[in-house]
Length: 198
Image 1 (cartoon, rainbow, N blue to C red):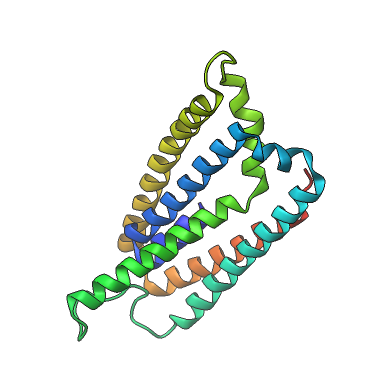
Image 2: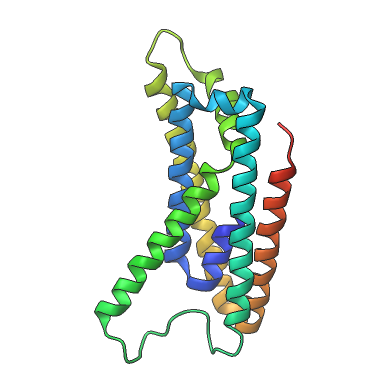
């Protein structure tokens, strides 16, 4: 949610949606991995869990540092979002939008894939609803898909709310401060993940 909020504040609903989509795809991958037994490794192996949590924690800290740096870099600019008009033509704006969407998607994806707690969640949660006499993979993917759809709907509504609230109530200065706080939260979450126990 902190990552989606950051993108909603700095770029609007489009980058926030692609970050949410990356998060959703990460959940789907972990759901399939739990059916294949891959995520059991992270639930049972202290070493594998530790490696993934340190890498995931470092990635969250990295995202937090980037958010803080971006908030500081935008100080003095009229807005954190690109203006509609300007010397650059539609192809250049379109290329930047595609690149930005790709970056947001990858950030959301890695935020989930590098979190061992998501793996443990799927290992402990999904098997309760799986019937042994049918395909475990198809059932697990179906259940993970339901979870992903609910999460994607929620994050999309959340991003839209943040974007509308920011547009109506917040000045650019306040947005930068909130983005800086969000960066600090991401860093704190990264440190917490790195120090988490199984």
